[in-house]
Length: 220
Image (tube, helix red, strand yellow):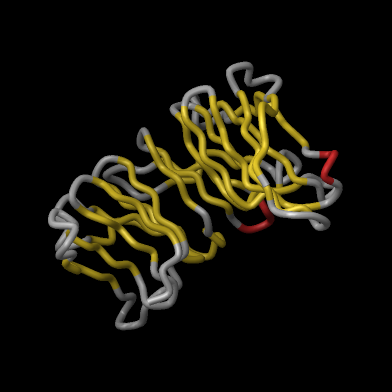
């Protein structure tokens, strides 16, 4: 399949494999990985582009936003869906999922025993987001700004219904371009940037002061 995004939880790998669907792989023996389940929509695979997990719920971006109960990984059960929202990149944690969606917004979606619910949206005026990462109660989003320059944004999501932008870093010295990847942990973040002119690079940020993310180093 065309493997796009994946995550590991316990002894299982959950793989968004594009047009070949969702795949669940037992990796308890890494030398002998075993496909234990997949998912098809009425016999036709969806275009699965990203996965995120919170508790026993696997969240999938496939144009539609889908939620599976994977408490029994060999029998993933579709328990909720938001159709037609343009869900693409997904991260999840603490009973909440975040997905890039139609109109370049980031939808904030509560996950649980009931149907998933959009409780807030982060507008494109904050960032035209291409990738997301979650570090505790801070959602890190990257993409570009209204001037087509790479941008990093830190959003406080401690209250999911009222996400608040705490800090922004624009990479103005690189000219126009796009941030295409982000990872975050604690007070550190790494941003992958593709300038329109020049080599792709990594920017290493100190986000201990969320109101003023600062670049500490780069790697081209």
